[in-house]
Image (cartoon, rainbow, N blue to C red; front, side, top):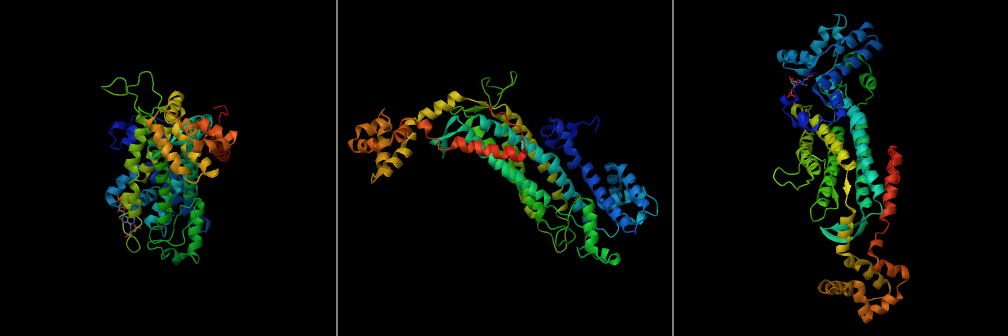
Length: 469
Ligand SMILES: O=C(O)C[C@H](Nc1ncnc2c1ncn2[C@@H]1O[C@H](COP(=O)(O)O)[C@@H](O)[C@H]1O)C(=O)O
């Protein structure tokens, strides 16, 4: 909308979080109130098309309704709603006012409001998925896959319980998120396809449509087919809530993957760890009072947005309950779904940007790894001792690590000076000894697994990756 003062909006999504990407203007096509009305009007048009096809409505009615909805504005519908106090009746009145008397009776013919509302919502959420949600998420996955591949051999200490465990590679750390996001992308795609429509009337029993049609279910299927949708097995005045619940769950759990990633990266950016960093522009300010600060603001933003929108899932579950053939208590609550979608897209776009400029600090990765380098070999040492017949290998190595912590000696040096263990050590193959002497080799198949995961998703989603990273 030209000259719109976006700062007059109330939602921070409008003026702050879904504003800077050129593509964000696309969100309006599916998620704005204008889109709501446009999609509802499309459903009314689909109905007239089928009525005309069946010879019930005059042939000219299709062109008339097409022209009517092309000129329809949200403002008109809202002005009418201020009289009717019923939003769908307002929409119907506005369309009827723009068509000939011969066409008028066929607008909303046999329909109830939620034949229109639910069907329109399923349709626009499907389109938003295909045209926005999936492309944004795939772009994010691509940026993670690129880092993953580049860093597949970069040693990193693995951490469990916040403590140094055994080594991985940074690429492997990133591959976790490539994989988790990829799986969620596929789930979203499946759930979006399962969104359904309805044309079953005020209580779902086709009461009105069965007056005119021998085959009201066939009639419903035809109207929905005009829109590329299918009906559910049973509806009341509203469609069964579960397909939408599952779809929204797929979005919210994807948001959780983004938040988990953001949180992980934020921890890796801690001053004491400092293995990665957000790119900092030359003029960017970290803190208003501490000039040296380089804060992980983008990762924090994503976690913060997730905190605001993840709990919206509770509302979705509450909307699964509707009295008898329906009550209206899911109406206002479900109007906020576009915000959830917008927030997810905003978080994905932000993470794509920061990920593509992620600073990986190899020195600190190596330094942190070296801190406990000697302890890291406790696991392979005990396993190798056990494999060579030591009766109590875990306890022997545990004691050795306590000793190592008190002295400056490495585990390997301590093995050398413990007669009983030295005998076992001599039975180790050279390759096995190397594992203990060079803990950086103790990364299992982290690098191969990283490559395998990245390549699989790259092929599936068909995006480019620079192989040399
Ligand atoms: O086809 C029908 O309309 C059947 C009718 N039920 C209704 N179905 C759909 N919408 C209805 C219904 N009733 C009200 N309204 C109108 O919904 C609007 C609710 O506004 P909001 O709470 O802001 O979401 C607000 O505009 C309401 O007027 C019934 O009696 O079963």
